[in-house]
Length: 111
Length: 114
Image 1 (cartoon, rainbow over the protein chains, first blue to last red):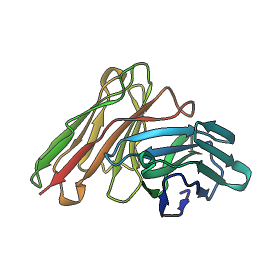
Image 2: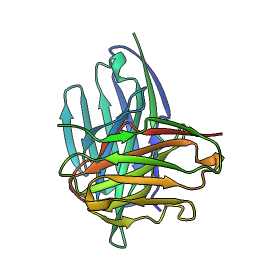
Image 3: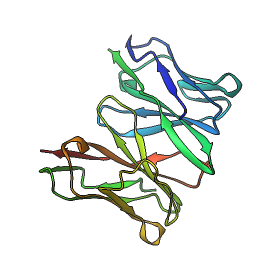
């Protein structure tokens, strides 16, 4: 099956810093999503971004499907940004679309 | 708009006992997913429904796990009998349709098997 690798696995920032999270995938995909899992375990969708660039406040994401990677940018980080960020891809396989998640990037933002 | 609802939030059982989890998706969402998440890992798909039809269940351990989605709305995931290795968080998600929209997740059910 498709491999999804996220980097870095862990990240510690001071409040106000910027960061870039990366998601590499091993094969062509039909769509890609970024999620934030807060410290209470709730997964919140951030972006549905099979290609191109999107921005939402301090967050933006870029997917370059032809080169099989996606980037999530966090600017002016806040303590509430802490948690785990997951990249999830869906690939068509025999008429089905199997969502595959990476192992995530664990982010801690200190005040 | 109400989000995805799951119950119970926590469940502790002894091994070999049965357990069931319930999910109510967002109104109008045709696609429903059940995932398993182990500590430190990303969610892993167990089964996906399009309306009442299970269309991706290759990763569901069918010897002990079963699922149903009657009338294409609520869904139940059952484990019988539970094993120690089944301890995990079970997540339900829904979306408008296949490959059309992002997934919206419920809060999950944390299962502990003793």
